[in-house]
Image (cartoon, rainbow, N blue to C red; front, side, top):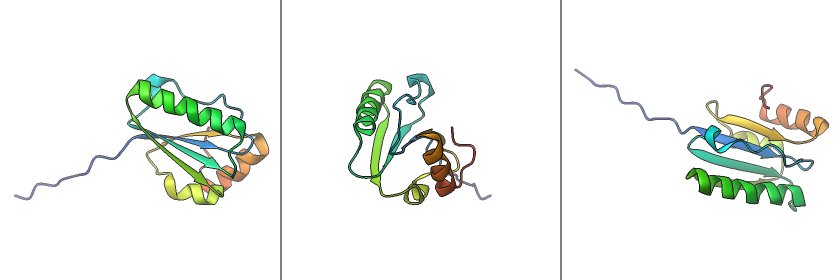
Length: 110
């Protein structure tokens, strides 16, 4: 008899920060999965992006989960980091959010 083994998938909360991020999108600690992945688009970071990143660091510490952060040039670059099992949270103005969703090819991003 051959036993099938499966690798557990990592359950992540992915926060995508656009250049027009408002800073009001961090999920509650109870909603955090195993990892918080922050994808900040553009350089240099805006003050709002920097503040959200610092709050995400504190949230990860209090929720005792891993924090992973990346600075990216575009939403298309962010697509490589987002998996189908991830909980996606998008923080950007309406126009930029549409561009990011197209780049991520994820119409259900919040």
